Image 1 (cartoon, rainbow, N blue to C red):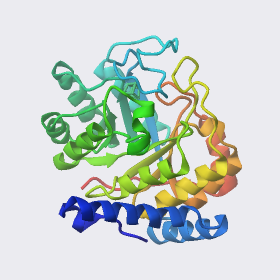
Image 2 (image 1 turned 180 degrees about the vertical axis):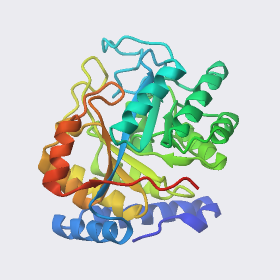
Image 3 (image 1 turned 90 degrees about the vertical axis):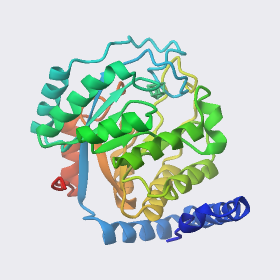
Image 4 (image 1 turned 45 degrees about the vertical axis):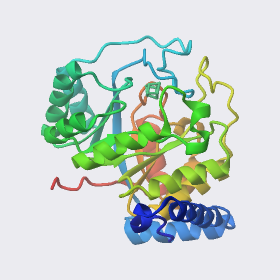
Length: 334
Ligand code: SF4
């Protein structure tokens, strides 16, 4: 597998550019392999690093919905678009913990809490920290997605015991401005760096089907694979077009291209959990089976994600049985 930038990344700009384009070319070559060769290679990497029949299961809760100041073109929660979603205040701590307890009883090992914010306000931090402590006390892994974080906020969340922070880079640097204008690709990378420096594990991925090219998808994965440490979790979403949003009429991504992207993610980031995230309702069981073969080994469970539909437990139980998959056990906390 091409280790792409890494040690030389501190060198001069010309050599970084050269390394970046070399990395891109190497990744393009893999992405464009004959489909069977690509899948064989991805599955071999997958098998060498994970139990190929175990899938990590996360549950997601929206702790503060809608009214977001950002203009992400794919999102139902942006205040910039008439998506019809009603904004709500930050949920009470006790309610979040009660929901997490139910999720644990339902088999989820990681609890992800998402708030529709550009970034958390200092006045929100006390409640957020109490949520992390409370969910962790149940013996679950905790993950949050709250928008941009400062180094101080990252340190406070690390101190509370937050395991993962989700902050997607969404797409390539080139295409980013077509989707979001209220923050930059560099802003995203800065938060990822703050989180990583605080000692929190990183969950970062993107969305396919926003009108990007295959090169954009490849470039996004090359960026993630070449962070100083690759993300531990890499969610790959398939756009669910939201009526009223900027991307309401985006053309669907070709399922084969989607599977190719999963396979490339597995090859470039052999030890990361690659998550089939939003958009599973738009995937056939056969497409999901191909994604699992190509290296996806994490899903969200439950009826809804932050605001979008998800297949629901019954369907997932049946799919897991048909494919002989089992839930991945939680690793003990260090
Ligand atoms: S994706 Fe997140 S930051 Fe962007 S509009 Fe939606 S809630 Fe806000």
